[in-house]
Amino acid sequence: MPPGPAGGREREILTAIVETFIASGEPVGSRTLARASREGLSAATIRNVMADLADAGFLEQPHTSAGRVPTAEAYRYYVEQLSGEAHLSHENQSIIQDTLTGVSDVQEFMERTSHVLSLISHGVGVTVATSGPRNALEHVYFSRLGDAKVLAVVVARSGVVRDRVLRLDIPQSDLDLAARYINENFRGWTMSDMRAELARRLEQERSEYDRLMKSLDQLYKQGALAATDDTQAVFVEGAANLVTNLGTNQATGEEDRQRLQEMLRTLEEKEKVVKLLGAYLDTRQEAVRVVIGLDEAMPASNLQNFVLIGAPARVGGEVMGSLAVIGPTRLDYQHTMSAVSYIARLFDKLLNESE
Image 1 (cartoon, rainbow, N blue to C red):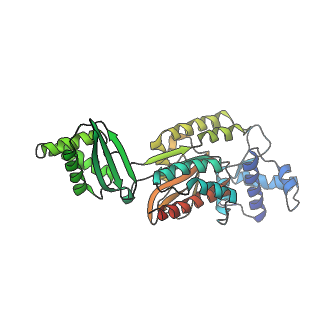
Image 2 (cartoon, rainbow, N blue to C red; image 1 turned 30 degrees about the horizontal axis):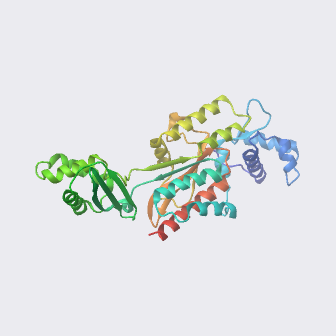
């Protein structure tokens, strides 16, 4: 990234260009800035400053316009100057609290967060709920409901309870034996580790515990232990906002449309979403992070014209996932950063209260 603008006038004009372009989506001309200048700067003076900013790599000129638009370097500089003092409007605080208050389940919180982030940022709300000690197994029990039906209940350390009805014909005595085996051997294990070890034991110890292993094998294959799957749950909402935002920009070209299609394809693949957030959001970070240009994690993905604003979601000191907004570089940064920060703090507060 080039060094920032040298003088106060250059910094002020660059900030005005970024904010004007974010608001209008139109290339910014010197006359527009002159009319809004608090110092009464002339269009000629502003043109000279804009030429210097362009030479420094902060502005570029679309082929069809006399105005200039910010480059990624301009957005990065702009974000660095933003104050962390910004506060959300009371209206948006109310929307967030109404959406999230009363939620005690991590995955439900993340699902609702993706929705509310897309709603108030006009970008794409993306959340990932990850596994951790709170999602480890507390205990299971199995209950025969009748002919060829079994209720499997799995309770996690977090207190989350999942149940599933399976089509199985196993006597209650065998179900009790299977539940006791799992509870005595796997309490405190994450679900994925437990399933991996159980699969290994089913293969190696089948002959030794024939009847028990037969019951466990049937329960396992029918998904009795998959109900609190601790693989990362991904929630994406608001992809249509990308299409809408792009459609309002008259300067949009075919190349931008191709980038949009690439982003939409990326958002459809949950593994790529996890990779994106994992690449840019450090779980040790305390503040909201803004990343402008998302092509570093996926060099062939054509995502350099998109921005990610995100933060880890913690309960106490434990990271339970991450939340972010993805959108075009023409985004209301301060507003979105405030929303992400507010929800991350609310996550910790609400989930701690629910324990």
